[in-house]
Length: 303
Image (tube, rainbow, N blue to C red):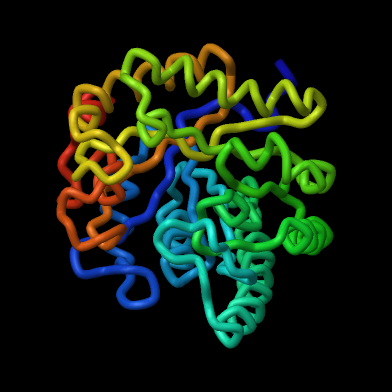
């Protein structure tokens, strides 16, 4: 295995939106973020944030002011710059929207640079986007544009630079980006691909090695892997989605990652009601190790 780029530690994706809150509308308060981070403190070393919104501002401020022992992978959220007719839930946009997104993406990248430099002691790595090149996404950005963003950020920050996406694009279309980023960040979800709990860890290993073996000289980490605890059948058979399976998969994954010294961000800390459809059983809402009310599920109770 390649020399790890970061010291091993427990890592988790964090988004603190509670009931009635969602990006662009209402953000968690300082005190709400502090409550969350106190729950996670002592159990997790690394946090992953997805954008440079006011939510990220507050999280970084809380960590700094409260002197909490976290290191953060800070992300930029880049929105659709081209249409994606392969997206099942709508990836086609007016040209006005695409042009607006291009300007917003450039501003988001500038904000990423600003925050990374402002919080050098907290931000351990930066990502120039999330799931913006995989075939099914609704916010498609051309690979050459992602390369441009990565090059721009690398010139302006001291931290290692990456891009986070499903493992599949890394095996083919993202090859030009591999030459630019400092490390590769992959996502792997056996449950979305309808693997049984008995197949799950081996499938994650397959996903990881499909990328790691292709680029033997480039560090690879996992920036999303998780197991939802509820499903209405949309993409995930309901019988797979429960706390017992989540506990088994996360436990096996973390044990393997620790043995490998492989940094793996678990998705995610808390359930998020705003995600997905209005159906309360929508799987996107239930990936947390804690409920939206901050009650530990079976796996979190073991920490």
